[in-house]
Image (cartoon, rainbow, N blue to C red; front, side, top):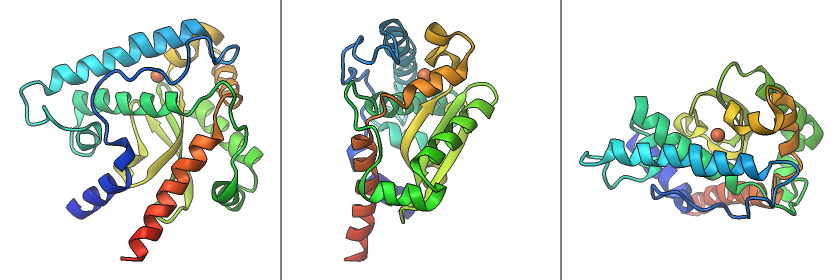
Length: 220
Ligand SMILES: [Fe+2]
């Protein structure tokens, strides 16, 4: 278990995350009309900021005081897991969008999607259906195992595939706060809008990093 955890940390080296409110990688109006300025202000500056502040409050003067988000997520539970995972999940979510995205997967990820789901269109349909059927709050993930095999994973609340030993590639936030300002109760509209701004350059790079790490391991 310790080895698995260390390996996981090595693979996720680019996301050994400090606990802080990271700025958005684009302007508040840049994802319109798919995500409004008002939604980004609330989602990032209010909801994410609250998760960051609560995590910092919970770890102050504890054994987790100097821990990374990943270390907390892989060993804590309860309120600390929930708040730390929500910070990680939102950082990962916000980083996958761009005003001028690459609109489809390419390269090795495109091949893996065709192999696992039949086509990119079918992947979208499957993930959207998962997002609509997830009861209450949670996340729908496209994830990979260490060998590059893809899987769609639904998690309630703050759940994240890292705790199953899988590597997240793409996240859909299905908490109401992600879409209620723009779409009220119509979760389907909120989810459909995201497909226009997901930058597959970023998702392709996340997948390549996992495969490259696997290749690197095999050379040792
Ligand atoms: Fe959210």
